[in-house]
Length: 231
Image 1 (tube, rainbow, N blue to C red):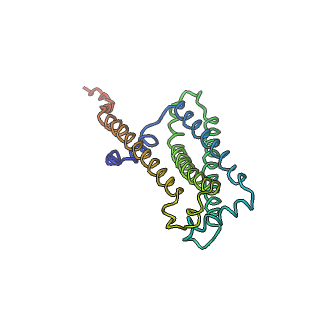
Image 2: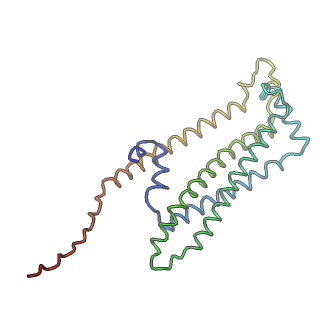
């Protein structure tokens, strides 16, 4: 798979999860960071529905349907979007935490005190790396949906001027301050992600190139002596 090192983003994932075996400490550090981040975000996400009373949420969603969500015939479209994003974010993040716990339990069951501890660990990681990969994808999806939850929470909680809420005096949904904040946030987020992926791709590209340049050990050929010829 020499071609993969030229693909930005994919070379990062390949080098992290499928190119060699990391140390046990590196895996534990990754698990700790993911579990901590997911747990913190879950605590925030599940508090979003409790920030509204039933009538308050219904009134806010109906208010936004006059302009910002005027293309949707459902007056509760905004609250439905918040409900959906809270569900998906909670699902992705809780799956990440559950998988971290299961991987930790699996690590606890490894017999790393045996003489063949390194061989056991490499055999374990050969399969466990797929779990590490998917739990990372769950965490990234959870962070993305968390951002969407925050945006819908923001527009439902904070009102704007009547012209923007009712699309009067030549104001439209496209000129809403909420749309401006969304677009600015998307530009900043996409710019941050693009620059991060690009820099990491260059870093891991150089790492993969160095791995290719490393000399491979020569195979050891066992020499079997010939039996002495009988005179």
